[in-house]
Image (cartoon, rainbow, N blue to C red; front, side, top):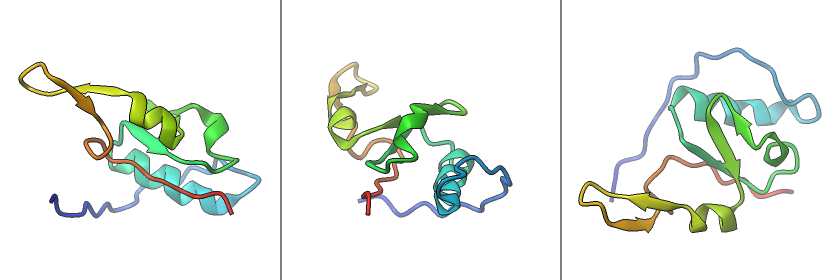
Length: 88
């Protein structure tokens, strides 16, 4: 199992006016150079893409193929840094 990744948040942008607490999720994804942000959050999901980070649902993430160094395809369930937020 991989060790958790701790990221120092340096970004100061404000994007989600409806729920400003969601901005920390965007900042963490951006500062960690995430490829995907997995969420069911009603304010994050409509972004679809933010600064090169694709915003997807859990179902969409499980359908995204990932090719490893041997050229074999597998699920990216855990292979990308992702954030999964449940809508409250």
